[in-house]
Length: 293
Image 1: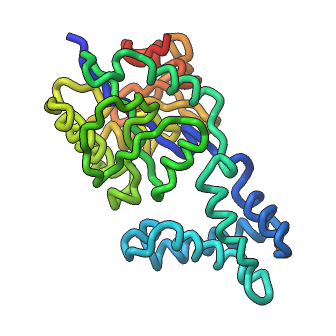
Image 2 (image 1 turned 45 degrees about the vertical axis):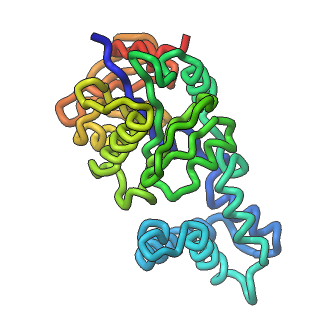
């Protein structure tokens, strides 16, 4: 019997990446406003500011009710103030925050938009479909990921960890059904809890549709670009895992045996496929629900 599939993907480094190194973008914006600082100085100061702010206000400020935008204001101020006499330009912080909340700071990998948009048109995405395909995001991030993805051209549902799920009649099918962010959950991958948050939200979605989540009826598949946080975390949580090759070093134990499959890694006793791109998801392992054509 064919089973339903919950497909979840990582965001940073898997779906999108910075348009150019973050220190370069920070430096360019700051110099354009009169702050004299090199990219190397930005990189060094940013690392220190990020570490200091993370220690004082964990989880992007969520733990102290600061909020992510104010948290980033702290990081930006601590990054540039040591290199500038007097007050920083008033537009510097909001400019940088807005830049990295949108496509101005990030770009999607070439294979992402077309594949996810084609998946959203598949009959299996409909609530009435059997078997069913649901697509989500699980990422270590603050709460800006849905805005970044929307800015890049994807249709993203507002649902996230902690959301109240209500049935919405006649709603257009989104490319992303929900986003699970460490900011909301309070822990990061590879912690099992962040993966459990995804299946919990799936259960709530099905409840709103008059259905029931039964673990035995669903395959759980996670796609990322890192071995420890993504593949190992997913496997430890009881999911299957796939690595999309975004240029990092991969210790392949076996060669590929299907179109788009570069090879396999041994992770936690499981063979984890390393795929050339998202299109290969539809050709490996019998996950027929992921075929986009």
